[in-house]
Amino acid sequence: MTDEQVLADTRRWIEKAVIGLNLCPFARAVYVKNQVRIVVSHARHLDAFLDELDAELTLLKDTPAEEVDTTLLVHPSLFPDFMVFNDFLNVVDDVVAEHGLEGVIQVASFHPQFQFEGVEADDISNATNRAPFPILHLLREDSVERAIESDAGDAEKIVDRNIATLRELGAEGWKRLLD
Image 1: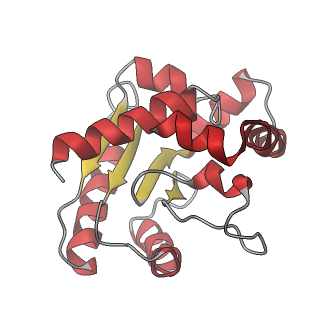
Image 2 (image 1 turned 90 degrees about the vertical axis):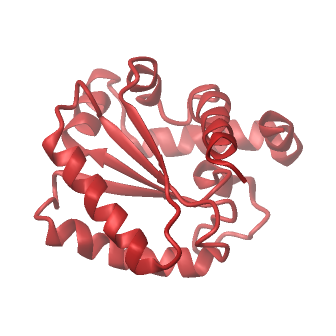
């Protein structure tokens, strides 16, 4: 798969699901301002992927939010197994801490087979964190806080609304949306 196809599929997911279904009420503003950086990783092993994560954390820390507010680090092939990816997130948290960015940058994760603990694999609620490829979403915490305040939102309400939206859409609707 080419980088162009990975980028196109990722953008289609952002536009149709994340923004289109309003799964993230904060995404539209930064996306239309071209403040979302999407990086396709070609790392052949975890160490190389961690090097890319280091570079993206540094870039995000050193770049004004007006230029790059958030970064999606996408790897189309390194993490085919969700549980391996999920376990890897502990290492990601350690890397954020090593950079001294706890409370500054948070990482949200997305995976084609994402599954919440205690939820059946085919439950549509898992789609809130499903994407065409494994993705580490690096978010500035101050941007998230400002977005929540300006939206008068509550993260818990957003999660509940997203699950209700997906249950109404259903598995077939979700599949059609992304096809």
